[in-house]
Image (cartoon, rainbow, N blue to C red; front, side, top):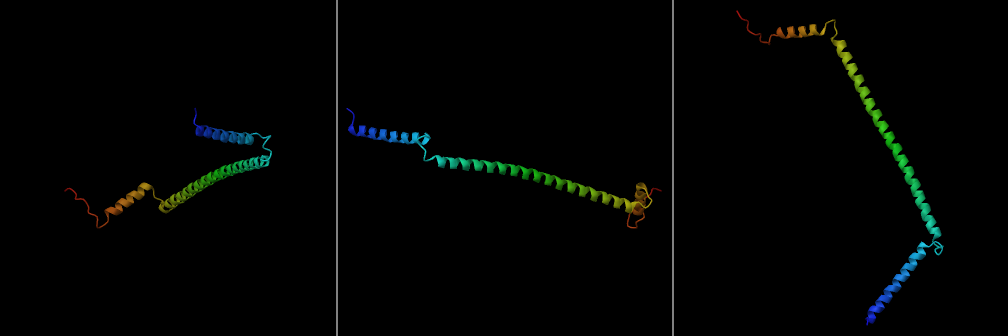
Length: 128
C-alpha cells in the first residue's frame, strides 16, 4: 500500500503542474488572452522601431566609414604631391646654383684640384 504522505505530495505536484500548464496555454492562446494584446502589439512596435533605428545607424556607419576612407586617401595624396613639389624645387635649386656653365665632370675635376693644392694635404712622395 502506498504511503499517504507520498500520495499527497504527488497530488500536490500534479495540481501545481496542471495550473502551470493551464497558464502557459492561456498565454499562448490569443483567443483567451485578449487583455495582453495591446501589450504585445506595443512590444512589437518597439521591436520594429528598434530595427528601423538599427538599420539607419548601420547605413550612417557605412557612410561615415567610406567618407573617412576617402579623407585618408586625400590626405595621403596631398602629402605625396607636397613631397614631390618640394623635391622638384630642391632639385631645381641645386641645378640652378651649380650650373655656372660647368659640367658635372668639370666640377669634380675642380674639387679634386682644390684638394690637392690645400697646404694641409700631404702629397704622396714621388719616385726619383
